[in-house]
Amino acid sequence: MKSIVLGLFWLLCTASTAWAEDDFEQLLEDEEPPQPILNIFSYNNSVYGMSTYAKLDWFEAQLICAANGFKLASIPSETVQDRIINFIHAADDSLITYLATERLWISGTNLGDINQYVWQSTGARLGYRNFEGQIRGGYRCVTLNGVTGDWTAEDCRERRHFLCEIACE
Image 1 (cartoon, rainbow, N blue to C red):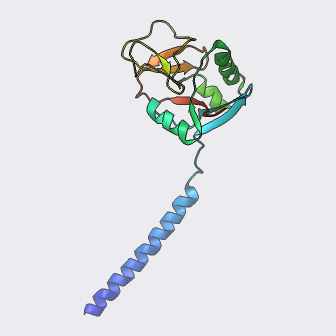
Image 2: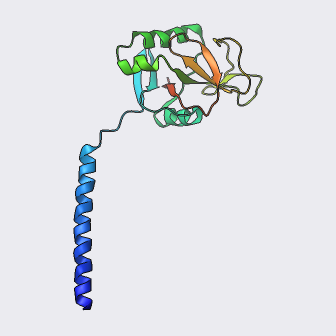
Image 3: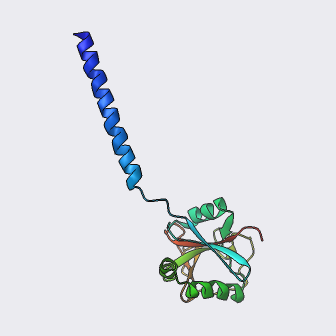
């Protein structure tokens, strides 16, 4: 009797393992290839990466940029701002065009001092500013509108696409 029970148990284990392997192989065949997190582009001798797949909060965006050799983008001058906006406006790719209508995380923040915005990626104070209207209190991280070029202060925990720049130039 014991051998019959063990035999049935072995048969069930073998059959379920085969079914599980077939299901796993089917899942692998149906799975789409992973999407790239950053769409890399260069413009006027600068290299950027724009998130094209993931929406992350400001802190997660920094980590993803760093993991790929980038940092959240800083915009120290109107020239740099124009360079970025011109690229976004010139893009033919429908995904980048879609991203141009959303606010993108950049490295501006006042997390260290509520009275002073800095570029977290460089530590420099914001010399050039392009905030849309009055800065709303309580919102500490800066976004870029890819269509207008305006900046707004937002809740750092909002999930957004983001813009990185190469860490070492």
